Amino acid sequence: MKELGPGFRLMLVFTVLTGLLYPLLITGISQVIFPKQANGSLVTVDGKAVGSSLIGQNFSRPEYFHPRPSAAGSGYDATASSGSNLGPTSAKLLRGTTKLDHKKNEVVDYDGISLRIVHYCLDNDTPYESSVPLEQFKNAQGDLDEVKLIKAFNDEKSPLLFKPKVPVPPDAVTASSSGLDPHISPANAETQAARVAKARNVSVDRVKQLIGQNTERADLGFLGEPRVNVLALNIAIDQRFPVSKK
Image 1 (cartoon, rainbow, N blue to C red):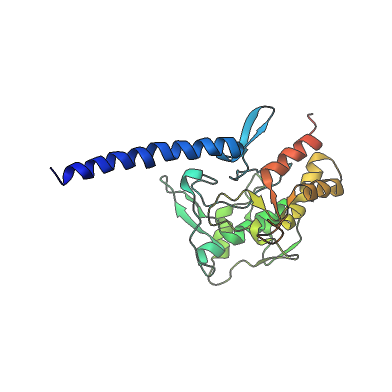
Image 2: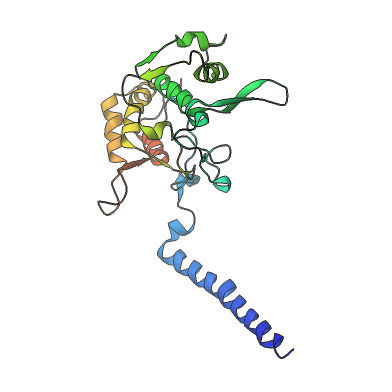
């Protein structure tokens, strides 16, 4: 008991110090000095929280800028932050894979960079070359059959060759290591500018001007790269060029 007593008292003291007092002190200081960051860097529009400036979220409609892909859970899931952990020579990463679902239907297991490039080119009217017309991979509704495309990319005898005629920004078709990156490169944003401008019935130059206004420079002038926060840009473009309701 002589040995256990001091140990037990020390445990209680350090539990109070490090488990209660220290967190309360740091939380209080953070709330006073950095209240926005301490509360998750939430972004609000008209008094309503619409997201965080630190965590990406999916935008898929043509009138919005699209984020980079995400491998976090089902996408941009902060509770499952992760990358794909696939190396640059991985066939799965490059060409994608399919699988059978519980109903024995073949579905996409992993989309892969090749399929992402196809979608990016079609979404943004980027010129491309294809060894096989993409019309052959469309269903009755005119949508691309992603399973057929992935199987064509993985065809060992005669794989589908698809090549953009202009460079596609790497961040447009690759996920970040966290899967939560809220930013895209200025080049990625400018490639999407024509699509967004068309959907909002404004000139491309005006949209690109807004991109420039929302481009964050390297921290301290040399740390990191110029970047565009997708959520902030989409909020700005909604406010500046709202979509007309028909």
